[in-house]
Every structure is written in structure tokens, then in C-alpha cells.
Image (cartoon, rainbow, N blue to C red; front, side, top):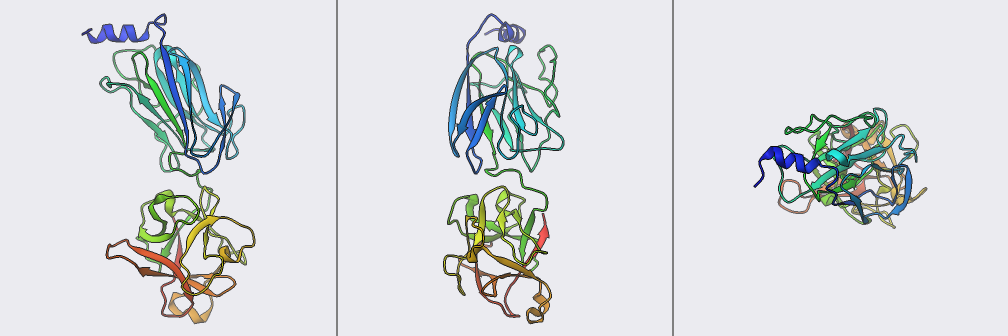
Length: 315
């Protein structure tokens, strides 16, 4: 076996060229336009995967214009590669994040502290550049300092995932919805399955995308939208007392998706901070369906002072 310095020397020799397989995965809630080095690569379907093969010394930036990104890379989160020295990194502008992104090297055996996975999403983006670097340090036997990463070796591949959280970064004003104002419990999309018909439940608050909602307390009526998706809280095609709630594609002026925040009506008594169904004056209530501590389903019933209601809370 080669000594470590010899291994690194051979890893960086520019004339030893092998293929580098880059797999790009779209976990965003919609299809995304894909760009590599400023050139359109077409559209990558939701849940889609594409394989790209490059020489080991390939250099480039991979990004999407989805969610208000621009074709020149502005306002986008980018995966960057400098193949001559096996470097990779993430670029995120300070004021913009159109999608989360992750880079996971694929190699048979990691070398010491090299080949780390890197992710940047709405929960955390600890290791990223504000703009693409114009130069890079010479490689050494030590891993480079974050936000630069390295995976020395030949035939190293990478998986780039857009929206590793499966949602777009949430807009400002995202809230949790707490049952009866209990700050430790949140309305949650069951199993983190973001598709039509998934029921909502009560679960321990955990700062995941399944519990982030966008709604208005000031508008006459509001949809309650799962942040970063096109899904809204829905009471069914014939909203009535006892309807179990789920997420469905958002539809304008839909009775099953129209809600009002009412913190003043005396009939709610001490539980006045409630979300009413706008047309039917129903409220969200919570019913245990299984013996586990988090097995609560969410449905609606006619509002009264003795029902469990919902309260907003900032995430």
C-alpha cells in the first residue's frame, strides 16, 4: 500500500484522468429548472434523478432557478466543484436561499477527515461561501478548512440533492400551530409525507418542515399553507363536524381550505385564540387515536367553550 503522501500526490496528478459520476436528485415539491455553469440542462421532475459524467478535473457550479433563483446563479444556492484538487463546497448568498442543497461524496473508503457530507438548508447552513471562490489553496495531507471540503482519490462520485428537507425554504412569517396553546405540541404532517391526502396530527414540536405553516391573523380569511409547498390544511370536500384534516393542493376560494383567526368572540371563553373554519364555524380539535404519546389526529367540530382549540406560535 502506498504511503499517505504518495497517495495524495497520485490523487492530484492532473494527467491521471478518470470519470467522475455526479448524480443530481430533486426532492423539491415541484419540478426544477437545472443549470450547470450558467447553461440550462432542462427540467428535473419532482422526485427525479439525473446522472452526469465528467472528467476528474471537471470544475463547475450546479444550481436551479426554482423559487426565484436567476439563470446567472444570483439568488441561488449552488453546489461547487474544483476537480483539479478534488474540492467541493456550497455557495449561499447572505440574503437569499432559493433551495436547500446537500453534497454527499461517493467513495469506497474515506481518508481520515476527508470526504465529509455538506448540507445547507433552512434549519442550518454552517458551511458555505457567500460567493463562489476565485482561487483555491494547494492541497495538503490535511483536510481543508470549512467551508471548503475535499475528497481525494480517483473515480470519486457525488450526489447533489436539491431540497433535502423536501420543501422550499419557508418564507418569513412561518409559524407553528399549537393545540390549546401547549407550546411543546404542534400540528404536524404525519410521517413527513408531503403528498395529497396525508393526514395531520399532533406531535412533539421538533422544528421540522412538517410543522411549519403560513397563515394570517389579520386577514378576513386565510388558507393555512404548509410552508415551502403548495399544500394547504383541508377539511374535505364536504366540511362538517368530525371531518379529519389533511393536506391537499392549495385552491383559491375553497371552502374546505378557508379559515379565520378569531381571538375576540366571547363564546370561546378562555380558549378564545382559536382557528375557526370560516364558513362552518368549526374549530380544530384533537382526538387520541392510538395509545402512543404522539398519536393524536386532528379534525373539526362545532366550536364551544369546552373544546381544545389551536393557538399560533412563532417557530
